[in-house]
Image 1 (cartoon, helix red, strand yellow):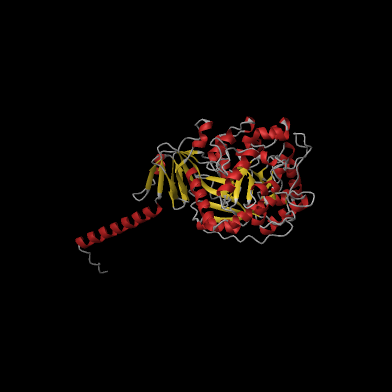
Image 2 (cartoon, rainbow, N blue to C red):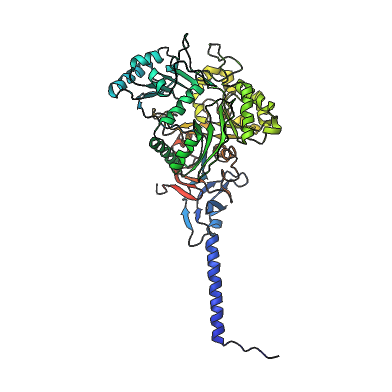
Length: 566
């Protein structure tokens, strides 16, 4: 057989060199493609992953975490194209998921300069007179007031008509469930003199059936919805951007917004604001539950998505409108009332099944919770509901005799720890014995009921004294809520650990929106939503927790807030 001629040695050498260079170039390209975009090292990472709760570093590729471990391990993954961030020992946590928030764009109004959260009637009257003297007729005068105004018999439509005959006036309660107003305000929001009470709400009336200038529950929510509708788009955008900026500043990467009125309008505003964080918009309908809602038109776009149905089943203890199984303890022989019947609760439950949407219900009183759990049993019980994650917002009346049934039905409790600061009021309303078991928190975790946290923040909350927990620029502050969750000022035995509070604010809040597979903990494969904190929230004194800020906030592997230099 004839032997093939050999290539000259020089040609063979060149061929081999080209082959090697090509192989190296291909390997380098592949290495660049697989190398992380970000490598964060030398931190104290709280992952919220029970199997591996602590780490030093993590690597991010695209929008997801690709590795978590020691600084040495993660550093080996970097390439020349990776951006290395030395955390300098700072604490890193999963991005905060605020599970309960209300976006209420401020009305175009003259805001009363009230000095206290509970102003007296003389101060309110003086401020209204000042507003009338300094604004053109027709200007809306708005103020946020407390219980004093609702205990004041003169604070009504007739008196406000005399004080401001040419100005619409609204005095809204700071807890959001009631208002006091005059005749021009009724006209502004399109309410007739003898408007019928809406389902779930009421307009208190005089002997002739005339509205006296007050609104309770769904009657009040309709006012909020109308005011949002009347607010110019540029004002709503400004308020949305302010909220979003505040969120990134605190390391909040998801907000679950309960949209009073139009969910579509709220979602559209968040999209136009180009939200850098994830916004879940939940339907907070002000229509009757007996009439099926139109199907949710889920129009996800980037970070804004729509899902969930919310109803407010009772009120709150401030005005004694939360429904109790016993009388309130302050001698008035009142026990509150539910906003809807048990049959209507069943309609809400079936509607959530029809629409394949998660159901969220505001429930405070133990009688309301008892009736709602009965409605869940009547519509299928644990066989239907145990995996559907029905949410009890607040859930303050989930007393010991109701806990096991709630657990069997698979409910989640979403609590707002800022309410814990109202312990004195709860003792007055419920009495010491019932106040001690009302508003369960840490005890729920021990029973195995999932516990998530939200701020209950409202963008329309007014500026209040700097030491007040309801101040507008701190109400979204997750570290204020973590302080109160871990150091309950009235019931220390219900406090939870700081690690448990962070998990409730991240992983369980994600679970509360069926998103725990994608976010809520810092694990390989999950979205890179995280916050690098200004101080160690697991070690600082409790009173310093609200001073915490994020110095670096990431959403889906993108830096949306960066103040590392501080």
